[in-house]
Amino acid sequence: MAIKKIVYYLEIYEPGSARDVWVYFSSSSPFMSLKVGDILNPGTWKNSKSPMRVLKIKAVEHIIWDTAKVIKHKIMIFSDEVAGTEGLRRGK
Image (tube, rainbow, N blue to C red; front, side, top):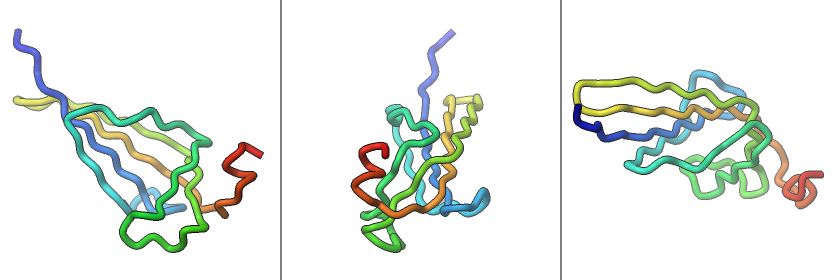
C-alpha cells in the first residue's frame, strides 16, 4: 500500500462566529499546535480591525478525511476578540 500525501488546512473564523471564515491557510506541512486559551495576533490579516486587538481561542476542531489521492486535515479555530494588553500576553 502506497503512503498518501497529506494536505493541511487552517481556518480561522470571525471572532464570535462558528460560520464565517475570516482567514484560510493551506500547506503541505502541519501547522503549529493551537489550543484553547492561546492568543493569535491578526494584525497582518486582511480586514484586521485594530493592531491593539487579538484573538483568544475558545475552541479547536479537527476534521480528517481520506480522498482517492490525498489525506486532508483541517483545523478550525473559533475565538473571541479581546484587547491586546501586555498583561494578556503574559498570561495575566
